[in-house]
Length: 253
Image (cartoon, rainbow, N blue to C red; front, side, top):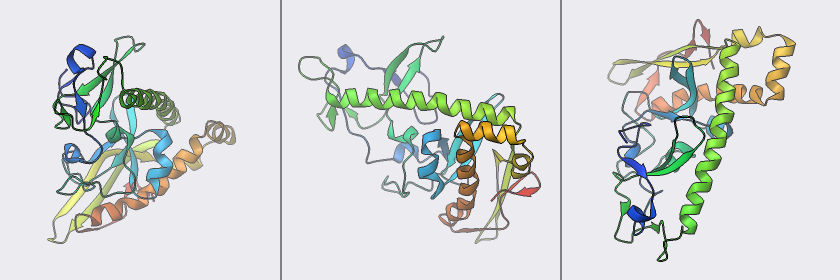
């Protein structure tokens, strides 16, 4: 399997024959994520992220997903230090599931558990947790991984429903923010979308009621609240915003 999903280099199906003696040591070193400035976010994570980091929407064509900003510049993750320690309050599930991931069949009905064999924590030296026991049966650790990824997949569908409703109501618009480095260099953050407050206020009572019934309205407010965290993210790289983040012509925070 070629490099995919931002951080996976060599994800292969987990089998008893190939991984019967394999152990995985994960969860402490996040250097695998140092080269990415955002990762996908599930709807269930909005509340935990909104107080600390910034939630935006990203994608191409008809495939738009929520994402959490981890840095300002491309290929820079400000939430991971030189030793690989996570610096934020909350670790996104997208990163917590690594080095595991589900690979889906073409029809999307069947899923196969894969592991990124390029991850240095995958080993045959007994470091970390075994995937299979001496009898070739799944360990409790592997069962826990499967349970976590199954729950993640459920949330993936819930999150896709949210973004589809936002697009149907035309609530998303391009987002841009400028930051000035202490050296005087100006950086522009773009390529993301945010909910327009103006368009949100223009919705009918019936449309707002439908969003509320689907618990989407709360998620929208959490997203808008999180835009205020851009300044804190910028300060991690020693910058100060030159102006407030904007969506279209309007202040988004």
